[in-house]
Length: 259
Image 1 (tube, one colour):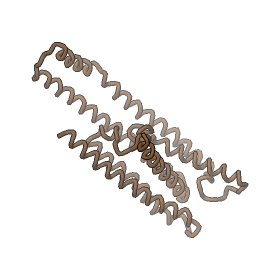
Image 2 (cartoon, rainbow, N blue to C red):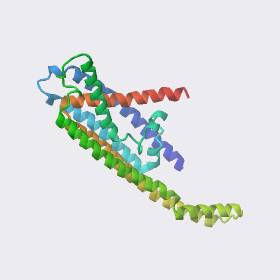
Image 3 (cartoon, helix red, strand yellow):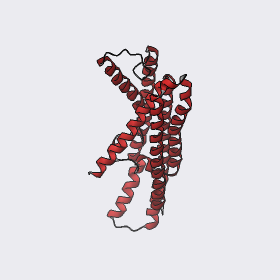
Image 4 (cartoon, rainbow, N blue to C red):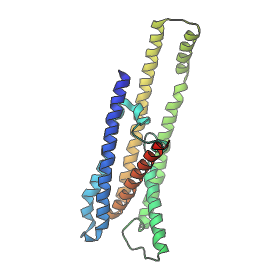
């Protein structure tokens, strides 16, 4: 019964994730259209509703994910809805928060190099025209995000190490000893199993807390980047983020089909 419930929950989140990716692709098309028609706008303020919608789409993902973790946090750390490639890139069941900042650095650098190569003055509003003030703020955000990542990683490491603490080892030895001695004391074994279940329920709570902190840092970092950039810069950044997310998922699906 427990396994069937877990499979049902996984299926529900899998369906949500597929829907979420589809909506992300629609948002991407709207962002691209806005970028292509930016010169038709009187000012950047017309982009704000679109930006809010896209950021809200990411927030909704983490909200639904948080609700799913309350029911079955283990499945969030072993997501069947992601491809093998995506799973290999995970940090605490999701993207590493600093990925957003590295994406910003990479995209702005690539676009700047392209302009210099073509001897075109850097006068446009894409990600190659970051000001010194913006770069400094992004650098500070990067450092702070790395610090927060380290703290959360250490919390997960302590939780993982606790699996081999004295009590867990003693319980494991008790079961093994009874099996070696061919003792069929079902009542005592059930008591031990109950104690183990209670301990793992506590560890699930710790996992959920770590996951919540990681997801909170992910969305906080995204919002911090958005706050640093101008509206049209945000549009270009969100285009790059959505394209990377969707392309990695597509590549992962193709790789899984060939293995």
